[in-house]
Every structure is written in C-alpha cells, then in structure tokens.
Image (cartoon, rainbow, N blue to C red; front, side, top):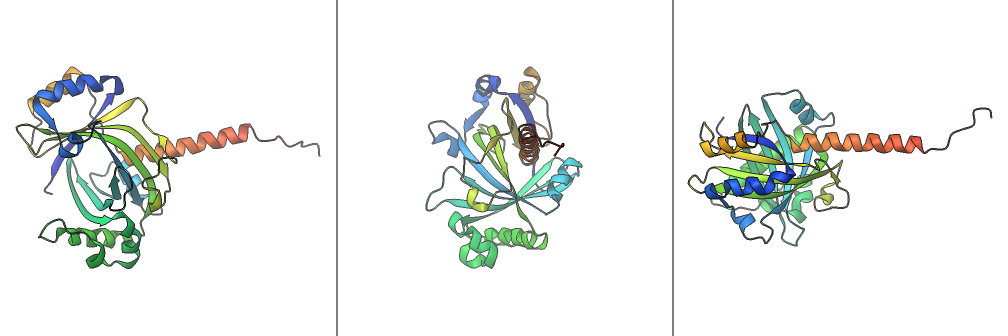
Length: 260
C-alpha cells in the first residue's frame, strides 16, 4: 500500500504552548492555519458506518487493514461551502486517503442520485475526483452506510520547513454527537466534549523514520504514542453520556407505590 505513516500522541492541554515553541524552528504553519487570526480552523466530519457498526468494531478489534468513511467540511457553513466524500484506508502504520469535493448543498442529492458528473467538483485535470466519488458511492450503497457520529475539533497544522511531506497537527477540543443527519454537519449545539484535558499531536510522514527532532520532542515530554481514533473516542463518549443521562433519569424518576 502506498501512503504516509501516521503517528498519534496524546498531549496534555497545558503543554500546548511548550510543544508549539519546540517545533517552531523546524516547521511553519500550513496555508489554512496561516491565514487565520487564531492559526486554527474547525474540522467537521460525519462518519458513516454500517448498521452493526462494522468500522467501529474493526478499530476496537485492532484490524491492521481497515477503512473509515466520512463526509468532511471545514469552518462554518457558507453558500459555497465545499465538503469532501472521504475514504481513509489504513494498513498497519500506513494511511491513504481518497476524497471527492462536492458543494455541501449538493451532497444529499448526490448520495441519492449518484450523479457524479453533475455534482462532483473537479480541482485538477486528472479526473481523480470522480474516481474517488465512485469509490465512496460503491461502499455507501453496497455496505448500507448511514451517519453514525458527528466529530468536530480545532486543528492547528504545520509543515516541515525542510521536508514539505512532513505534516504535524494539534487537534484540540474534540467533541461529538451520535446519529447525526448530514444537515447537522455545521451544528454546534448538539455536541458534547469528548476529551477535555488532552489534544492529539498527529505526525504524518513518507520517510521510514521520524525526524530526529520529532523523536527528541516525544522523549522530552514523554508523550505516549497511541492508536487514537477520534471517531471511536466520540462514539464511546456519547454512549457513556447517554448511559449517565439514563441513570440520572432513573434516579430522579417517581417511585411507584407497590402497595397499590
């Protein structure tokens, strides 16, 4: 499988400034982060899964080769908001992603009609976007995929100064909701915080080994490398939230007088 390696580290929120200062000599903000006053942008994804949550279970079972299906948008909803039909494939430590751009207002119609020629946006001359859209629709229909979770976080992203294929991101303030509709992609009111005290440091690279300065960063702050999945974290958090809400509801429900 051709693709990049992806390592993820769990970092306490109170280290964000120190880690940012540490990587500054080796990185620069990516174009999306660099043009924003806060240097971060919002990533929004509706994850799709089967009725029996096959993708979720494959992650928990530790399958080395697996896929995730999602529709991803950024920022806030505008008239010309662009979203992406994405398939993220993972094999061992390597990841590969296919994505097809579609205007947010057209996504529902595309999913129901399958009219790729009309609704898929072409960003280059090669036509890969239509190929990737066909792949997504093949699995969407064949597996009976449906919205499973809305996952939202803030991303601060960097490229390596001397190796542009090296990408680092701070993914912060993770929150989610279960069983969303696609119309909830830009909704904030339904979200629950899923990881309040930590953020995820993601490192993506093509070379076989991490740059030495990244290794030094990890060692200095004793950052644990973990198989973190924002999708499964949000699903687990929402299930726990629902269970706690149900327990609270039962605790405060009227007690029936059995004598009657």
